Amino acid sequence: MATIINMPRLSDTMEEGVVAQWLKKVGDKVEEGDILAEIETDKATMEFESFNEGTLLHIGLQEGETAPVDSLIAIIGEEGEDISGLLNGDAPAATTADETPAKEEATEESTQETTTQEASAELPEGVVVVTMPRLSDTMTDGTVATWLKKVGDTVEEGDILAEIETDKATMEFESFNSGTLLHIGLQEGESAPVDSLLAIIGEAGTDVSGVAENFKAGGSTPAKEEASAPKSEAPKQETPKAAASKSETSKQPTATKKVSAINSENGRIIASPLAKALAEEKGINLAKVVGTGEGGRIVKVDIENYTPATEAAEAPTAVAAAPAGEVSQSEVKNSSMRKAIAKALAKSQSENVTFSINLEVNMDNAIASRKMINELPDTKVSFNDMVVKATAMALKKHPQINTEWTDNQTIYNNHISVGVAVAIEDGLVVPVIPFTDTKSLTQIGAEVKDLAVKAKNKKLSPAEMSGSTFTVSNLGMFGVDSFTSIINQPNSAILSVGGIKQKPIVKNGEIVVGNMMNITLTCDHRTVDGAVGAAFMNTLKQYIENPVTMIA
Image (cartoon, rainbow, N blue to C red; front, side):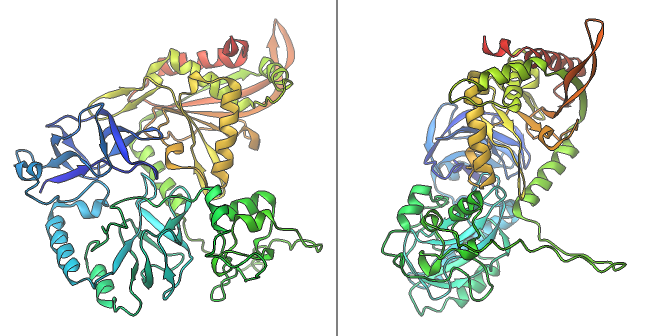
């Protein structure tokens, strides 16, 4: 059965998209996971991955054309299948690109459609089913980190229902509906796929037990598409300014009213993601902060106004040591981010055919140049910034490295956007410096610093983590001499940067002390040959060892 592919919502603010490039043409076979097209959003150009298998039967939007989110852009089905009904609007869409892969199997689609219609007919008036939202382009599952409403609470449009942990960040989930929270389908700490039952909102006293049971039994999303809840629209992540303003609205208790922010049922501290990030940045113990938000919730303004008590801060609780000679284990639930990392790395290792090239770089000139640059007013660059700049310039001279492999073709990226791996508490994220080759050292330094702070506070948007054409991973600051990274797909290569070490070297026939740094290039042999990788590394080495060439 044919499947309609709609314009996806690839960022929280995206309202329309432009097809920058089709990577498949009508008649091509499409496998689940294939890149159908590159979509230009309001923030970046991103790859659009297919969740369906079959033949590309129709392209509804040509390259360069623009269409709103949820507009038809393609149809995938069986070869030779008649899709005239879909094109004329006479037949219902089997599914859309936003739905999870499990819902896109042809044998299930007609059944789900019937179930949706039946469920809609039986749905009590005014009742809305709220499902697990897709808060990033790669999100397949979400975890409820915190519920900010409980069953029986009144919900206004714009209220924050819960904090949802995705594969990339913890984000606030805003309600598009008003009413009473009648049912919670997922408890704190529990995970579920996108589009799973999350909650039910309606008039107080309405019996929704049948709705919940029907949904769990295989129903789809009934009556979710009310005017107040735009279809597939991702909830907007609250900005710092919005968070501050909400803390002063009439929804919240006055600042002088002290309400405990600790949930009496599970001892969990209730605080907004922004407040948590700000508290972590300032080293503030949230347990000591009085929340002025709804239900005692700690918000941004509470952290800004917090005055530490005179007593010493409590020492962090240590994990109890196992008694000597006794086998002991503890379990920590895998976060959505760790699951996503594991899936992506496993895919990279299983699909790529890799090899690595190592080089040693003399950093004497780089050290001297950095010192002079940082003596300028309002200027601060790191060695990593210099490596990123040198990498972008080397990629311009060796476009074969700046490529992506597909089964039918090799894609040459004519732009250069370097991803910079950043370690955070839950794992690893790769914020991207778009059009890196066009930026100065100081611009790169400022952007990397800003993105690193956002990453550690889990405030990176999906757009800021998408679109890399090459990746740099630096463990030198952790005392690592050299290492080999796993390629960040769909890139063809990744650069691993070690620390600067003093060692004896031969210079002008004499043994002297040199500041040396190891760099390792890991390549996908399907797109990059050894000689090409070696040429790139030598060009990169020349730029790093002669920083003046990056400034001239």
